[in-house]
Image 1 (cartoon, rainbow, N blue to C red):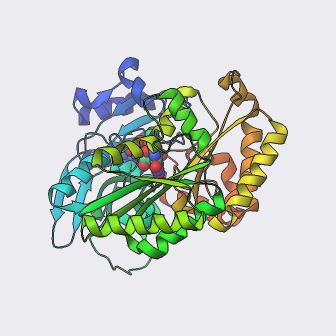
Image 2: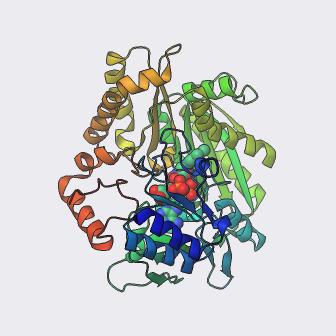
Length: 476
Ligand SMILES: Cc1cc2nc3c(=O)[nH]c(=O)nc-3n(C[C@H](O)[C@H](O)[C@H](O)COP(=O)(O)OP(=O)(O)OC[C@H]3O[C@@H](n4cnc5c(N)ncnc54)[C@H](O)[C@@H]3O)c2cc1C
């Protein structure tokens, strides 16, 4: 039997603590954060170093066992959950959590894939430096998962997404070789960019075991404000005003609708909008300054005064302490948690060109409401990046599980066809995983999809790396 021979080989390689095979021990690794996907596994393996990862992959290749890489298991597309066959292994990188080096001259940090994102931010901060990747799950997601999903988050506007923050990778390939691409170079034009191929590949092309990341000077201060706006066009005008006046000091621009904040207040009554009754749109704006507190404060006040004068903002509060700034961010971050508590909803992590934003929302809301008049639309997102989380919740009082099962396909179709119509993308930052795999070909285009399939076949000919994620497994 392949599986028992593979298990014996894993036991010869790893300590008992590194192999979980009892159902209760494996359970946390077998379902996703949203509890939408539940899988089974032959075992959960927890290697401690890259050499062990490489040997595990070689054993898997020999015995035709497929494996599912996993970091913090906070992904929102089911990419880290194994299938129902019970024949796959989950490869958790959690134990590989060492910071290998911090290079002050090069302003880089070299980390293992299982490092928790927040621990990397903290290590950089201890040296007065900033690792700018930041997202709601930063206390539990791992850098390997961030790179595998090309995570975005709240600082993309200024610093880019995970891809933009990575200079080099160490990767275990599908035949168990180690690609030593851990280079901290800002220029390296040596043919095809293998690093970029693995980033965003969601564990389907190779296993990221370590990375070299870019660091930045730590700003001396941040000013966070909440601003009420009357409409989407006003919100976009406000964004452009801040871009023009604050230029690179603008590091965050998050939009929250009244509905999304009402849901947060319902689930977390301590979270109150300091702007009073929720306006149509509440925008969280963050400026990070390298000069002085006074410089930043004066700038924020001047821009907000102009926005109020122009009527593109109707009210504003500036956080007067770090604690208050944190509560502003918590309002934003608790929307996702509030949605999870309210019951499963149909999520759409999309990007739309800002010039088409309003028309997209108006048209999509209209089509949805014609079909489902009582449905709740919970919109929020990283507006500075054109990224909208367009989420649809069952009407109040209707069982969300029943509603979602009956309507999911049609709701996705309505929204994704509108995304297509307005020139957007069906995945802004969460990836494809298994959630969007079936939609990918139609929206990516047949040629792009075929090229992706060719790359997959070339790098993983036996399809052992996270099969049926991103691309459907080919039937031979
Ligand atoms: C509250 C909350 C807020 C969030 N906010 C954001 C946000 O603002 N922006 C955003 O982009 N995402 C966000 N996410 C989604 C999620 O946190 C990110 O996708 C994150 O990058 C996943 O990291 P992880 O370590 O949890 O990966 P996992 O969930 O463990 O894995 C994700 C995918 O990467 C693969 N993978 C994991 N590790 C490796 C590796 N070492 N090598 C190869 N493949 C690997 C897995 O197989 C899977 O396909 C949020 C999630 C939550 C729960």
